[in-house]
Length: 225
Image (cartoon, rainbow, N blue to C red):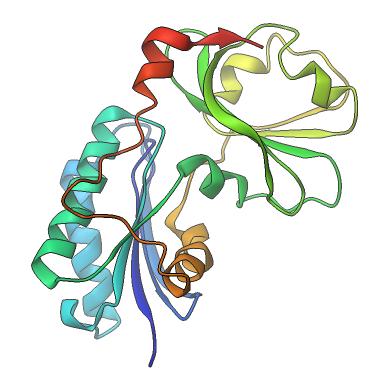
């Protein structure tokens, strides 16, 4: 039986939705105007995707959502939509961390992938991934300085992705640093990730699931690395 998944990613200013079958991307819609358009665009995007694919809500096997960290408002909108659909359709909810989604937008042969999502002031949400997307550092909120990530930069090329790059690029002069500002978590990268979770029955409790705000780190434990 085919596994049809609706994927939703709203952790940043990129309002992104995709439809996938058995881990293969079928179609997607996303908009990034530099502002948060999630409240206006998310539900129309979902309806348009299903209508264009001639797929009904009852055909969906599960809903996958980018759980954060990221924008509090964006995450609330995306998670609320996903949970509402799961409740109404009585189907599973799958959650994928948004930093991993962002990391999967980049393919490398060697070095490290470090997604940076804007938090506040000089803070970012971040983690570190190997070329095969193994997470090798915990997800945390950090305060950037000119020596941030030096232990990785001294070893190999490091690819920094995301809207937090704008904060780091002006102060990081390391020759191994490679910056890609125009990268955002996208539901296009969720097709296979959500399918793998679905096959393992790695699902959430819809009633109690909350976005991964990283609030404790954001308010109390932000640190310099």
